[in-house]
Figure 1 (tube, one colour):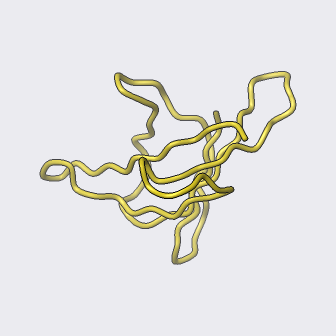
Figure 2: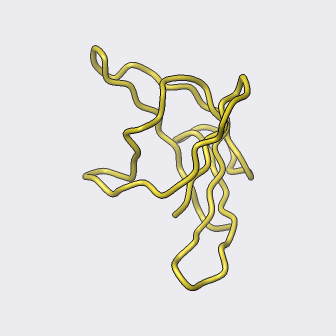
Length: 86
């Protein structure tokens, strides 16, 4: 899966794969802020397919979802998104 995070206030998008960890999929290199997320299923050698996205357990799946990081514990932030093939 390839995820693109575009800063809500403008700026350079962050695109790439994440890594699997217990309980999900993540990235460590994203500055805290508000982003628009898009995703696509892009296995090597296959045509990429757009995925739908939503903030975890909130609203309907759509082509993108806007989210903000929240502090999980002091100095550790997270955002939870769900992605699925249409």
